Image (cartoon, rainbow over all chains, first blue to last red; front, side, top):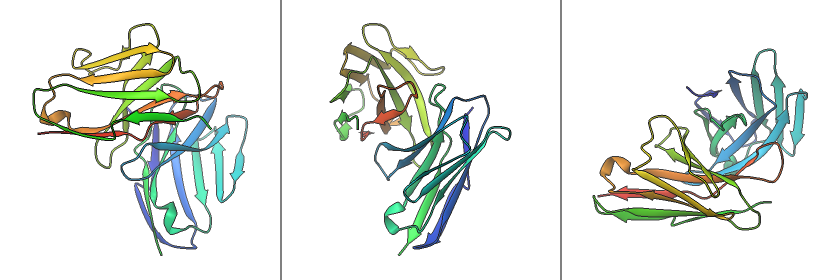
Length: 107
Length: 116
């Protein structure tokens, strides 16, 4: 079974809006990672949040982690058409990825 | 950042033939590499863990005789799909650990395999 599960599975927004994706996981973790995948390409690491962190920022990305709920969220602010991609969360344990959120940003 | 090169990016082959996919870490040594398979609009499914100098560790349900993995050097792992059939058509992606303890993965660009 998947270690990470993202929701929503698909999200469509207009440029300039914020996009929020959620991830739930099943076991204890040392860190949780978010990746992005453009269609037909490999994954690119976006941001990592450690288990002792509650929030982390990187540019337009904001990640939160709630270890008590075993959940994380990724917020992309002021989205751009170029943010259109699939986003995955993953835990380092056996690198099992969730099903991903497909984000479409319309210009 | 660390770079992983995967080749070829796209291959079409006839049913029954074998296809080799290469995964190279360009600017770092990778004792461990990973091979994934991805179906359209699906997540990545870990197929196997490739260990330099030793046998690969396959995930449950993955045929090791079908998907041969060789990790002969610290910078190269290969996946050979033997006697490919149309159901093997998929997107295959490799990755390697970076040099930190946090297990950040650096991915190749993927190989799209189409078996006719």
